[in-house]
Structures are given as structure tokens and as C-alpha cells.
Length: 310
Image (cartoon, rainbow, N blue to C red; front, side, top):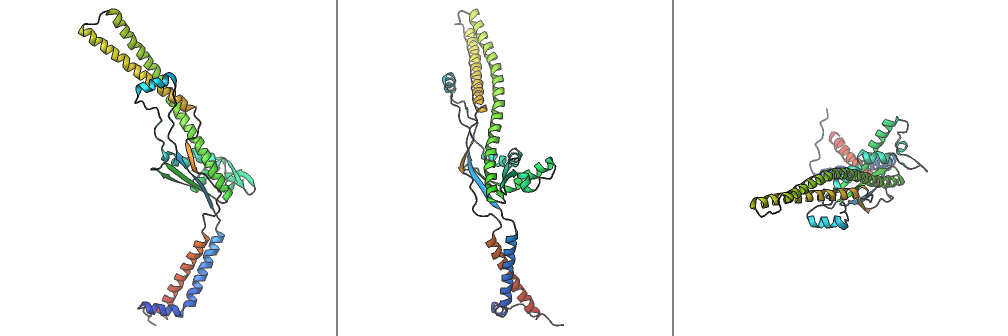
């Protein structure tokens, strides 16, 4: 039995083997590059389009007349809806509230506008399964990136054609804004109902406090006595507290009412969707280079193995 030759003992020995077998290494490298090119050509092309937007903070309501005077008297009353949460917008993009509405729209495909389920090949499935699989496929095609520090949200969507990618990005942006408006209006409507109900209760409490103070003055024409002054102060504080509470609740109800009918967009588009000029994958140049390197490595490994057993 022939004993295997030792592995290359030095770098010079390895170079000597490569010089002798350079044709074999070149052949493997070329075959690898051809295989990579063929694989890249056979794989379907995909394109990406997306947008970047900033989540705006809820606008402060513009109060006039008596409401403005009451707000200025209260001073520290916060009428805004709080800071915008960019992470909410980033999560909302991939939620069913947005994805399913996008999936129900029609998009350009092979010279016509067809439902997304037809493009994904789910048109023959039952409606429930068709909608589910289409939404899941669209979720996998979506990507989001949220910058908490700057409040900028980026998203991209991948599709088989540049036109489809652009249409999906535009539709996603429009549906996202509509979903946020509905969410904001629903929340404001619920807050308005709650604040109005509490304001009605506070109004009754204010009326009771004022009535108690009125009765006190009717029964006590002179309030110079220390005990009467203490009672008068207590009743006045109750009236003031009830009046402040009622005023705050009425202001909150007024603000919520304005927010409930506000339909202006809550996002500012910084980078609108554009028609992609280049495919996102496969990267054919990278596939050829990787095939070339892998083929060359296989050729070198073959030389080392054959040389050892020769």
C-alpha cells in the first residue's frame, strides 16, 4: 500500500504544486464562476422601494375666547396628546391593520391591475386562506427601521418588478396614514366621551359647593367670628377646587373633540418612494465572484489531496 505523501511542508512547496497544477485550479475557478452566473440568472429578480418619514407630535389645539382665557389661568394644564412614538408607526406597518388593507388593493402586473393574491399565486385558495397567505407573504417582503433618537421611520418593500415595488410602497404609506388617523380619532372620541361625562359630574359638584356657600351666607350675615371665617374659607376652597376640576375637564373634552374630527396626516414624508433602477437581489456580480473564489478554493484543495496521495 502506497503511503500518502506529506502535506506541503512550506509555502514554497505549496507554490510549486500550484505552478504545476495551475490549469486545474483555473478550470475549477472558471467552472465556479460559470455556476455562480447561471444560478444568478436562473434565480428571479427582486426590486426594493421604500420611504422615510417622521412621526409628528400631536398638534396643540388652538383655543380662542373663553377657553383660551381659562387655559391661560390654569397655566400648567397640558393639552397636547403627548409625544409621537415612532416605534408605534414602525410596528403598525407590519400589523394586520395595515398589511391586510394593502393586500386587498390592486397593483400593476403584466400590463394589468390585479389583486396582490393573484400576483403571489394564491388566487385559487379559499378566501380566508388566500387573505392570510397574502398578508403573511407581504409581511415577509416588508422591512422597517426605526431611529428612536431622531424619530425617523424607514421602511422598504420587495417585489418582482420595479413598478410593483413602487406601487406597494406608495399604498403602504397611504394605508399607514389612514390607519393612524382612524386610531387617533377613535382614541380622541373615547376620551371626549369620558371627559364630557366627568365634566357633567364636576359641574354638579360645583353647583353643590356653590349652593353650600350660598346657604352659609344666608344664615351668617356677619362672618367676623373665627369659627365662621374658618367655615367660610373651607367652603370657598371647595368651590375653587370644584371650579378648577370642571374647567380642566371641559378643556380636555374640547381638545378631544377637535382631535376626533382632525383628519390631517400625522407623518411627514422625508424620502418618498421612487421607482427602483436596480435589482436588490440576486447580486449577479457577487454571485460570479463568489463562484470564482469557491471554484479556485476547490481546485487548490484538490491539488493538495491529489498531491498527497500521488
